[in-house]
Image 1 (tube, rainbow, N blue to C red):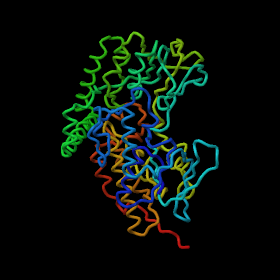
Image 2: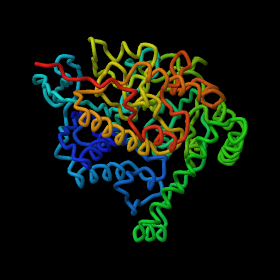
Image 3: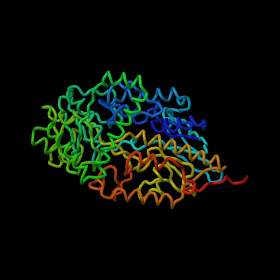
Image 4: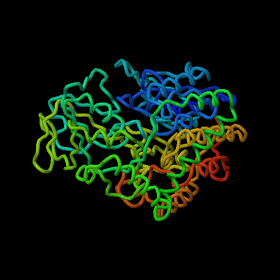
Length: 488
């Protein structure tokens, strides 16, 4: 088997396969080492907005997280240490960018084409019986559709491709975007920059985040008592599902969430004019609810300005907004998120009959349980369509997906099949049920990165984490074509 990507998804599926004796596994990773999004997202203040003891594998729990919400260096170190301890690291081929994956109907195998990222040498090809694409949804930076981005004469980079050589001290800095990345990096940059200009398209709902060291007593209890670790994870799991409850029921429970968020934001924004500019124009939960207790106060600093006028073009000196004002800056930081709906692009994936994923997804990304795609035998997705959480830990989903992949492979081994391919009708039924569950939820109330141009949500799971675990607990053979290898 070949696994593309060595982030949390790739490591999860490799660990699951190795635990069950399926040890012919190779991971291909474009970066210099494992880490995925936590390798690339190393901007100042980068941290997880899921509690540390929940944002970790159930099979590799760490009792001694230094903070309740850990920062990027500690998360990256945890993932790499886990890969080392489970014997996965030697199976990772780093510095290798996959450019194409092609299914061969004749041999019932995948050919994976790649090239080294540090050379201009020839392409390499590897052949595998099964393919896991663990490239996720948070891999490819998105830039705003603004005229003349390349005309800017100063420094510019995306928050997910942070320039480690850049020092903002004494500089005029622009941050474009006010999403999750901006909410973390703006408080770090604001005290250093001579002037910070934050460009906002729409405001966000915020809830407080207690970004403090793990209490010593809690750390001791978790270190000494495994049962306490399990109980603490369970408490965090159910507590964070309250956000999903608010999103699923916006007219009832969601109003409580909105009231708590509004109270928090009013406390942090006493100035009526700044509050008006920062206030969201969409229902609570329609877009990602951000956890932060220091972003809004950073906007109150005398050297910081929040600009809500639309950027119409970029000039060499800086952004020009719809009111005709030019904002002269030394550096532009794009905190504008990711191309979440493109998933595996620019990798070319070709399945049965020469059909590509782009063709199969011409009307929007879709996969059975977010894992298998009809017409692409023995290809599995980690963190695929409709497997994003509304507030919980994605690692819970990744472990469920890894177990599903393992069970699917075991099914082929038991039956003597060369591969399995989800039936188109099974995928369509599942998709119909899934889409029906979005009705009446907060997700449908506004435009967001979760949704395609025609309004379909292709990112989120519409229910609770436990429901997803239950749906993926068993591979139903009736939902799959079991493909026999052709006789020689």
